[in-house]
Length: 609
Image 1 (cartoon, rainbow, N blue to C red):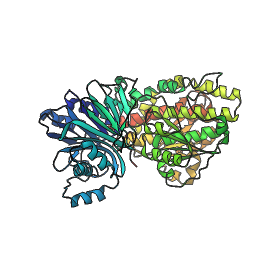
Image 2 (image 1 turned 90 degrees about the vertical axis):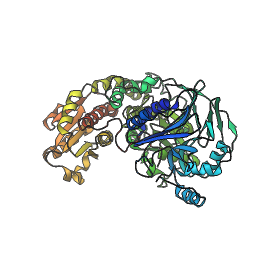
Image 3 (image 1 turned 90 degrees about the horizontal axis):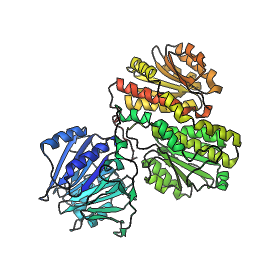
Image 4 (image 1 turned 135 degrees about the vertical axis):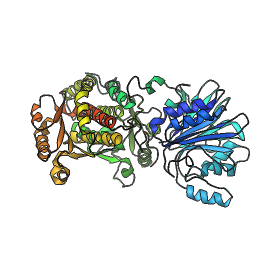
């Protein structure tokens, strides 16, 4: 949600800021703006509602000259998308400019208080209180004023701050919202995410909560909330800027779907080796601690929640440990029963998901051991968990997650096998059989990418419908949930997943002539029951696309089209079954003319509650 970029150096800031904002488009936004301090120490700001191209058009006519600047893509929370509400925001005197990602929860109180001090407000945003609060405290020291102002803010924030009173300086600070610092040669950067600055530097500093950074032409200094200087490690980013390019594909989502075989292979590398124990990197969980666990909570949001839902099936089946799966925003507020025998697993692609991070912190405060699964090295969740397992999916740009999901599934299997080894709930031969099949998944995922023709045809015949239903039983139901989410995310069709056995308990009332149903019947022990469910909807006029394992040709008698999934151990089938579901959602969205990579109202990283 929202994207921040800032630059100070010897080059012109405007093109660097604009390039950085383009690299952050995947985070979701509805307006954008930049502020640059010129050689006369004047604050010049240009904003625009809508896509970055609108801002570019304005800047083509009125270039903002100067080598110190900040930029922002806004995802509206307070006030409608408009130029008035767009960032950067300034104080009344136009001497202090601020970009902000997050939510200031006590902004109304601060706004009313500042109004009594003579400050005027022009937008509907919570952000506008920040430059005015800094102005109130300003006494010729921007860092000191920023520290005092931040001390009064409640909520989440990543801030980029600059002032015409100290034109060769940018101040930045974060709390519960991502912000990194880029260290170049005689130039320095701030950004919400690494891709924004990769064209300029690979040297990154990760900020902790309530750490302030001061960027000048001569270097970077980091301070605590008390104003004490902090020494920070500089990390070298190994992946290239090319990872953020489409590589010949029409959309990032399509590129990332095709990258899944490699991502799956990378996530298993060094962890799944025939004849050797599961290797979980530097995980500190001991065999004694694993044997003591009597319950696992998997807590996540969105797609990661669906991966956790499948993780419940897998861990319970293989390791025989009871598992509850919770949406992070619900888990936080329902007072869950946790003890010293509980393990919390949190999952987040970005490692910055606000509700998931809050759940992690709540449990850590109660002394509960936390294991994180994330794709983002150095993220807040990765740093704050007791242990972390990285999904080596690589950079994912499209808002709708694909390869991050499949690698989360792989990590769930790896973890389940690790528990099974330590608890002796499976024999060595049983574990080796599953591992052997897991190592075939990259090739079998590659096979699923060849079903383009059938999927495109089904999409072109059914993209105009307003509703779509996904059916499955057991772990197929978990996959159906993710398939339905992909369709609603990027094509805006109302789509829901239902357990096949629940049809007669209300859902079947929605089935009528022409209703589109996606039926998953890959599990051998549930195949016949699922075929019965398919017949229940086809006799009422539904059009059905079926998914089943190779050899189950009897399904052709009851569906309009079928996708066959390569044979593998039943429990592993979700990894390859979900791939054509992702492609189906993609082709439907393309047929409907939707913005596949940047669906409306959505953000890649949800950093506010």
